[in-house]
Amino acid sequence: MNLRSYTDAELDEIRSLPKRVTNPGARWSDKPKLRPGHRQRSFQAVGEGNDEPRFSIYQRQSLADASSFSCGIAFLPRGGRLLTLARYNGPSHEHGNITYLPHVHRATEQAIAAGKKPESEAEVTDRFTTLEGALACLIEDFNLRGLNAKPDMPKLPL
Image: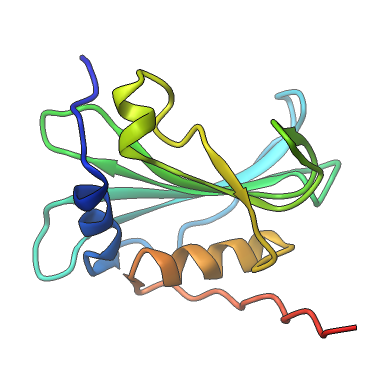
């Protein structure tokens, strides 16, 4: 099933839609046998006041390297293909011209139209340095309720 086209305005509307997490007590599970080993947990969310649309939120972190993490959100349209809206990644790897810095991938109309991964483009950020901080940013950026995370401390000017 092909991914339907989304405009940037539609993507912004999906991002800003109030969402409620339905399983805030999701537990961590370790996946040590997978290489590299990691821990992960997944949350489900629905549009507030409505059981549709549906969303999936995840956190994943390497067991060997705390800076190797990802936190993301996907839209699960009824009868459609999953659309990853955003990924918040730690500084453990390079991405294009981004070298070992925290960065955020966001779905764009341009990437979808080009047949790329919707969230293929990334931007460097200084809003988080930890997985907890990344989740706090995702909660704020995607209007999530029912889930809490502590933001990373802002960097002090030199």
